[in-house]
Length: 91
Image (tube, rainbow, N blue to C red; front, top):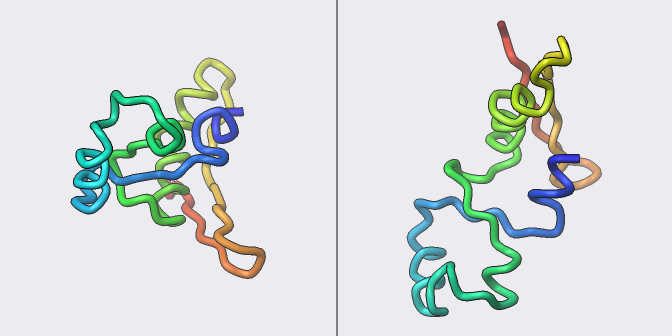
């Protein structure tokens, strides 16, 4: 499962987040292996639940489902049991 393999129990950091970039520099850069860097996934978008859902529908879904004839059209990301965000492909 893609989410489990790539995001589960990891910290998603936006590659343009100046605070995270400075923290990474202070800790020796992202190529250094330690608890901090081993648990961070750098992403090209601000990792809000809304943006994560959109990324899963637009990017991950087509790659993972290629050749199956199946299309991911909606994804819901739960922030908590009572709070979630979803994205639905309108095409």
